[in-house]
Length: 330
Image (tube, rainbow, N blue to C red; front, top):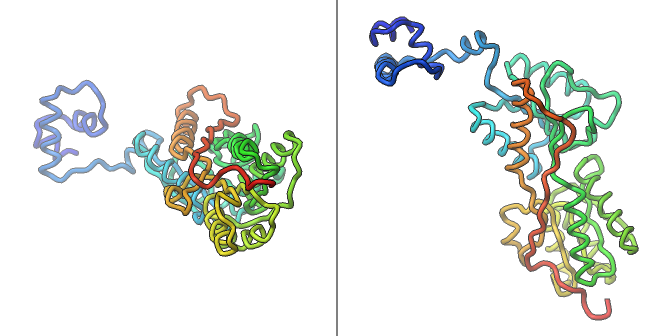
């Protein structure tokens, strides 16, 4: 910094103000300093600046799985939103969702110097009374049933599922079968509960539940069971990948979609419009979820007013060619 100051003919304090983007420096002086920085190859020491200011401009993200579309797209949205605010993201995957692993993850992130943490907590973990997040860390939780104890941002799982079931019933189907996600997933549980509630409120029969693990292969295996059921004319799949496997199983058994069986997915992955037939599904606004997560956690860091609680982002039904009225007499 002293070398830059000598070359630019200014004080070290002026160099500091320019490098930190502070006002109070004329445009001509700013250009002189920037030219000297370029000539000398000077770059501000971000670590020293962070220690001085007490902020690191980094958000830690803890996630328990990078194998699901929802988690990956949420992480991407968080990273993009953080970058727009001038923050970097430090990712820490956790293999096993236990209290010890959670505590260890926060300890490691503190050692890596982050200002706040966003936890993508798909599994049922914060529901347990024995699991606590460190009280001294600014935290926002994504995709969890954490209640009012933490600030939570999530897609409106219940509203999206209700829209899917009502769409299929509105086409004339007597009931809607459900290809559910894994039992330990909060999102899967929310969608399953909403499916049950929507059918019960409509006075419709609740068919036996079939379950997958979010993968297309599990959707195919469950689809073999559903394809053999002649009374199955409509299926709501808890995500698009399982819906893809279901479509394959129905095709192999000669069950046409949507003439014989209607299928609705959840996520609206980019490939959903290229399924055969193109998939009717619930669109999750991952970009908005990521933006709200970053907005909430930075308000906490800046000690701005924030109500907390749970913020839900609506899921939008996207109609394509995989749904239609049931066959005559069904």
